[in-house]
Length: 441
Image (cartoon, rainbow, N blue to C red; front, side):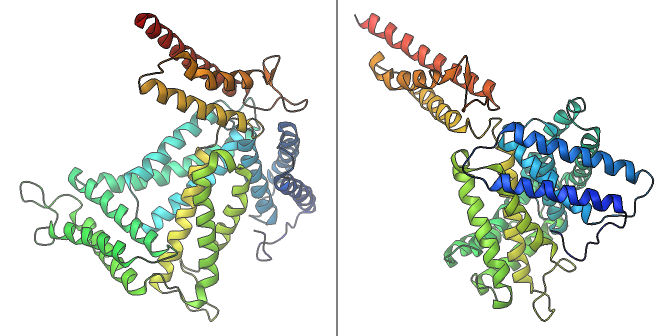
């Protein structure tokens, strides 16, 4: 994160700011590591205000002198990254600071997609939607948060939009029938890379994927993808090249069977561990994720990603990794960044202190909707368990608020709204059951 290669500031005033920001970052890391208490808004806001004050002072210094990036910029980036994840954790997901970590992750993903030139419309559509959401957040942020932060985030969002537009342009050059083939090829390629990194390699799984590639290959006419009129489709050459890359990769994967050379085993084992952890979190995220935990995964991924030289990793003797190793490690990095992105956009606008209640209500709502969609209940008695649970949650409120000690955690409105929806569903089912009982009588 901060290496000797990144110099200390020359300016004594910047060194003073560096010292203060380092102390704030250490406090943020301590707060992140405390699992005995939930994270309180007031603790986060105190540290956030301290960071913004140091940024204000730094801007005054750099109005006249700016000698490029130094270690201060790296520590400041760490502070913003941590604060961003804290804002998600306390449920303030629609405020500008929460957007910082998202823009970092989107930028990483777009850089990787640009480098590999392997992306699908689904990838781009999801990120385009998220960037539009961030635009909306930033347009309402200047009165609440530092103008410096608003400007910084706006620049980051614009940078991401520019990268996204270039990638979208490449997809737009494909004729419509080829776009479907392109999506299929990307899907097969990723499925093969996933099979290649499973604990137990399955030859038959990869062979089935390879058979799909050969089927696509056989649909070409004289090496071209053609339309109903027999003429080559726009983008045929590019897709033929992509097909060739996929077939080559399938041969390499079947030959190597998931075996990584010892020289690159350490990076591989770390990346497999991160990928597997994030995969589990993506399944249980509602109950087990504290967004600040993503910081450690991000930092590990960043270090391994940034250790590349000219896009590749070097072994102890300075020799670059062969194609198989390079692609395998890059797949794991990209997959992990993808999980982090998914977990961030899935973050609920509720403090972690209220998440247990919020998650229970979401489960109750799903159950009530399922009962309603399957025809309702035959008697009011069947609704007793739901009614009792809803009433017990409702009785937890003090003056209409869900309290934790003397604190009123963020996300009260969201939890109360969900509770009201559950009561409404329960009432509808009860009325329907009573009417049915009356008709039968």
